[in-house]
Image (tube, rainbow, N blue to C red; front, side, top):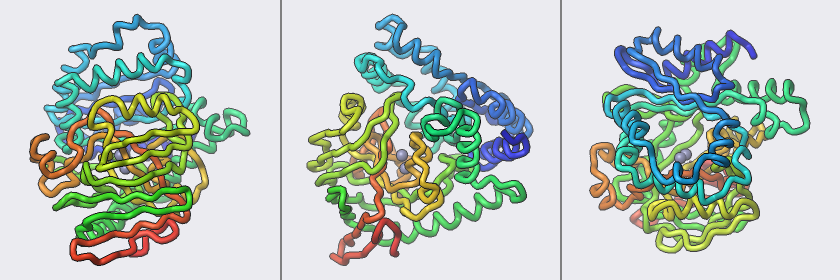
Length: 413
Ligand code: ZN
Ligand code: ZN
């Protein structure tokens, strides 16, 4: 681990990821194994003017023990003090930093009924619902970032010993988040976000009626888009007007599909890590937006649990374009971590849409967003990868023009 680079990285997360403001409260969700990184972020946050910083520590071992051994009843409810805390901080406009680092198969063998009960409880809890919406409509800035931990590094580089695997994963992550020895990453990020945003405004200007996906895996899918949709990329703007970057890395240009306008068959192109399990070979069928058939070569029961969480999780909430020829994709590394894998591949998410994908959506109520036609209410938002080197995407405009958006996996507009 290079201390100089780690310091640069922590400052990048605080300055570009959250863009910490004077007097703001900051919440950091972080695995205990990444304590060095958390400490540096805490310092950077206070130095940037944060009034207070709170840590929620996580640990794979302790999580697994709890999922396996805690009393069954604890998964049926959300602790009120937990949802109170999250909602209070979200309402105050706190910034939320999550460090995503976990053994991808940490929960293998855990009783799926426990996972389902816990998701169902989180889905029904009114305060958590409200806190989730405040994040989804950019009322408060949030960012997801990542640093390696040994169990994860070994999954990504199984043929190397732990030290080498960790070194390789560090290098891959620094490469993905544009941290280099002699360069200012803040400037590199500003340039990168500007370029992505240009693509997004071009797509928005077409106001496509629908887009059609086809590739040799068997994907044959039509996705309608709602009126007044916006394609988004790079940075986001919080309601306070402050810019932030929700995912580091980010390579995607994304939008929200029309909830009842998805028809056809969709195949995944990379494994998906979900609930501490790896799911492979996903095939979903859609009719009028709803998922009508779920298949997977591995982990089908876990995928079904996630899709069955609530009504909204049976529908898509995000459509995202990432060129096959993009930096993370070109690294050839399968990360088993959605933050990276989704930024190496075109993807969709089932579950709740980002209200910011509709013009003025951040100020609309859930009912108003439903009227706009997007998937406005679900406890879930699960991205899964579908991009391939031969993916073709054709957009159809309202006046019947066909515009080629993707040819052989890459943008051609
Ligand atoms: Zn996405
Ligand atoms: Zn997403």
